[in-house]
Amino acid sequence: MLFVCYPKCSTCAKAKVLLDARGLSYDSRDIKEERPTEAELRAWHAKSGLPLKRFFNTSGLVYKALGLSAKLTDMSEDEQFALLATDGMLVKRPILVGDEFVLVGFRESQWEEKL
Image 1: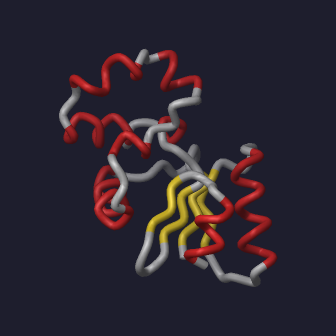
Image 2: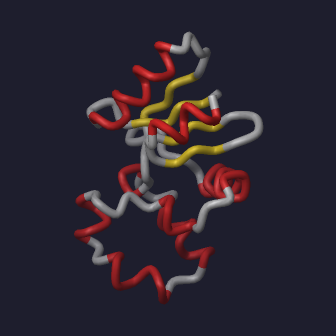
């Protein structure tokens, strides 16, 4: 599994505790240092079954500074994917990529169910 997170994020830390407590093997990746590529985001989106908007970190400073809450509805999916790939801090975290699933954001009950 791939665990994409921001190490300074308390929510990501909670998700990591869950993974470690279950003794699961995963590769960890800092979303700020090694941001997801557009191709990765497209693949994760397709596997997740979620609307693309759920991949945006809507509470993040970059999202707010760019005024994206008002702009996203007028952007095409291609434009949204390209934008997400420009800055890891725009992407909702943590992301857990498994063989059969992609989890975006940490909802403990949802993670427990998938793991």
